[in-house]
Length: 308
Image (cartoon, rainbow, N blue to C red; front, side):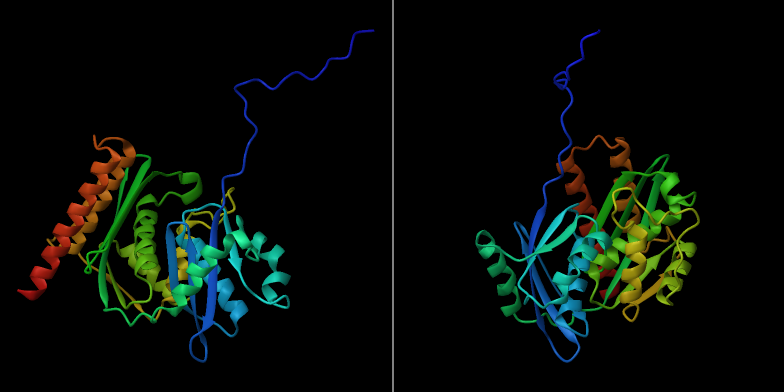
């Protein structure tokens, strides 16, 4: 009889999969008027604050958790919140993990007290006053299998991102998706203000108008499911734009006509796609410095043109 084979040692080049470390976020929520609630949240190195409309503190807490998750780049978030034992949050803990993969809710422990105090301290700060209306131009850039997008606001705020895209996930209309990603990123950063969105992409403007009207649609071929469990970017953008529908006005502008914000967004999008492609000869520090210089230059020109 042949001897039974014994399990061998795991090869040294194979390492068991480990879950990514979780980001811990302490959340505090308090009533602010008849139907509004303020929230303040803190993690190590980052803070969030805002206002949500809700019927009760449980619903407000869930809305705040969803917003923070959408704004955070962390894949796993452990939320700490002080709520009574009868709170709906504890009854829905399993559902929260199903609806928002990578998110779970716990009561804070003694070791979490410093973070919890930071969150509650944020509620003692004066509520923010209504921000000035803002104009923001958005643009996308596609180079082969790489996408970049950028946005530039009249306030000088800006954003850009470049990445390799997959048409299996986003469909054939890659440029439209890039334009909508830019609009979504701008609204996420500027939400709470009256926003005029300037885009030189007519299909993107048309789709945003349909989102504002409450229509549930995405570009052809764009899939609403990701293996990671995270909500796809355009699904988040669609929901967020509908939530901010009373504050958003999309406007089509003709591209490359010297409008400073539009030219700035175009430059940021092209910078992002070139950097993602590896064709820019810039390291990370120089890339971010170049982006900041572009944003400052075009925002300054926008202000000069308006006050001339």
